[in-house]
Length: 117
Image 1 (cartoon, rainbow, N blue to C red):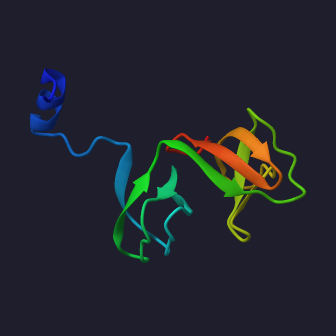
Image 2: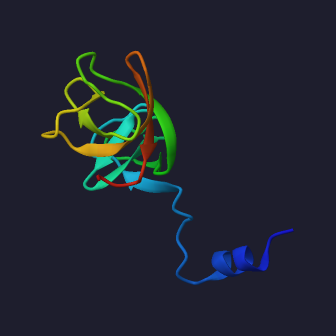
């Protein structure tokens, strides 16, 4: 049974989507699971998205990404994204894309906030 609050939300004339995943037009091609940065929006491609096409991008949750081997990231740190290597790092000149939940070797569990932080 759908709750009354959910029924009301879905029947609102201006409701578009729940916001956990956004339908975005990709400015570049993204593979499923790849970090997506579109303007200030940060998320993870749900499926492969061709450049110029609309695709679902998850903007909430925790995801595993590679990090630069020289980066010193720890739980609670902000993580930055190097678009040339497609890895997380600690270089503040790159866009800040989330918060580190855990680090194991060169893998980082990253909390996505849906926007640059």
